[in-house]
Length: 309
Image 1: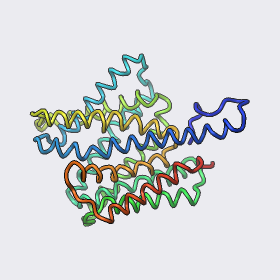
Image 2: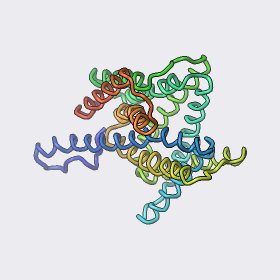
Image 3: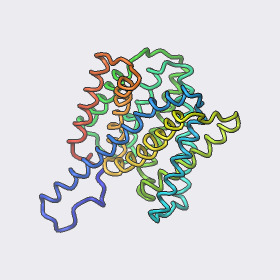
Image 4: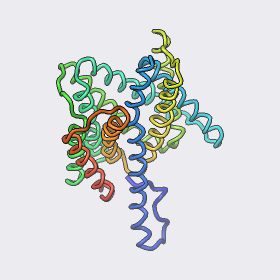
């Protein structure tokens, strides 16, 4: 879905009209790649925080609270207006229900299924988003896009690797996490343009911080107690939240929810690479093959035309 604000003005020559959508898609792809890099780095930073004694609720609270405050300051300095009315309520729901619900289902699934199966179930969301978006907008899906989504899912499974065992409850929770995240993305596609990427991200972060703050302090928060822990939390807040969320919404505005979700399957590939570089984890042949498949799907979508209505 091309951004109307970047389309060629009326009366422009045919060359300019053809170039604008292609340029818009390239910018959108670059934004999603940046977002995937930010989200993909989060597991590495989280492991560092866990090693320093920070628990999950405290980490999630600090992640969204620090990011939300930083974004609010940036909004103030730039003179940006806060969302209001129905848009504000939807953004609050995206943060307090969407992000919190997805996180709860995902981490609960880890207690009943292996990490590999849980991650693979979560990465069903590009296919779910693609199908739901086509149904809601009555958009015709090309065979090329369907193949790209299937390839991205296959590549994610190979890149994640590991054992794929789990109980029915674990599978149900993993699928629920994917469904909630899919709905979150589709709602964001409609709501974000009304408020802008930065105001939308700020409200979502602060709403999520409020819920995770209640969780953390009701059971006794385990806050960072070392420079390494604070550095890890700071990286999660800045790189894996502020940069990742803003660039995702900016990319989605130019590509649409379906293509943005498919391109974001770069996240596990980034995680695997960073884990090999910084944590010394080994990368096998199947993971390399999965990464190649994901990159092929990304290139296909980047070079394809916007979906037809």
